[in-house]
Amino acid sequence: MAFLTDRKRAMGLGSAKSGTAHHWSMTISSVALLILLPFFVFTFGSALGGTYEEIVAYYSRPFPAIIAALTILVTFKHFNDGVQTLLEDYVHGLAQKVSIVLMTCISYGAAAVGIFAIARLAL
Image 1 (cartoon, one colour):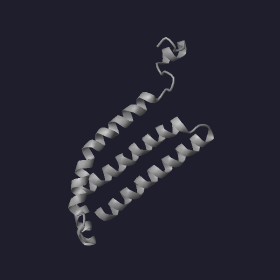
Image 2 (cartoon, helix red, strand yellow):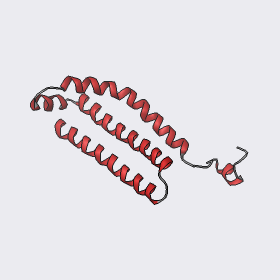
Image 3 (cartoon, helix red, strand yellow):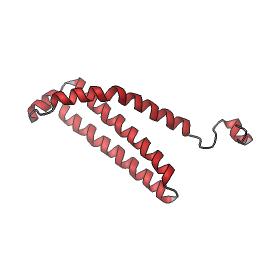
Image 4 (cartoon, one colour):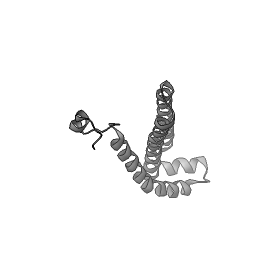
């Protein structure tokens, strides 16, 4: 703490300002994935190899559809946070900003497509 300026000491933010929040976000999504992925593997494995009608009937039940949607959502959020950290570390300047925006759009777009597909099967 000896290297902090008086202003930073008063605000309590440190040098990066958002590192702790980003770390907690990654930690929480990691724990959520530790819980969700085994459920997803077992629910998806049960449906694997079925006909289209069997898959639609299976994902019409709430538990498999909710597990699949939550897994897709949390996975892409975790992916986006990880890629953002990677880009902040290794890409600089305008390319960094453009890359972060592009990867955020791709991550949330892919999550939206996955959740839409689950919703179409479930409804």
